[in-house]
Image (cartoon, rainbow, N blue to C red; front, side, top):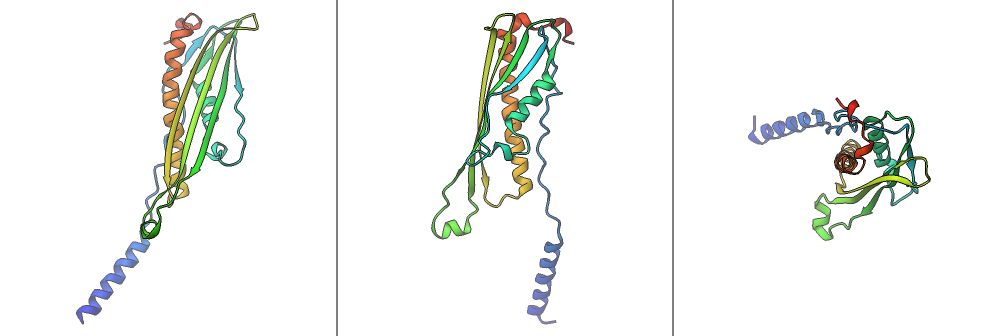
Length: 200
């Protein structure tokens, strides 16, 4: 067999094998829950969630399109981590900001722009929360605040599955930092409302 024909057949076979290979699926991203942490027990009778932040539900905001939004993750945190053991008082968890803003990034110009995979958009996420404890009066007896920001960029050729995994990681990282901030601040400023007898 002529060497050129043999080379062509080998090349064609290699292309067929490559076409038949299944693409490797991206990691789905971490599960956003907080059951790995011990719950905190408070001398309050109820916990109220207040979604003060209202998404405009249109660009440049994209939080409502994420697989798990920052606000949804915060609701999950309250469910997993906070417990009521009191007869009176109330706790109010207020979500002040839970936005994710998308910004189109400039593309490289000329030949480099044509042949280079560039980052398509930047996503700036912010989560701000205030937690108050109320007694009989209209004024809160104690409060804590926490705020976290994160930014990421995504390649223009990223698949839907890859983008989903990246967004889940973004919110997971935000909530990991939010969890640490709130836990520290609550033990510091809500100490007299924590029921240590219920803590394992």
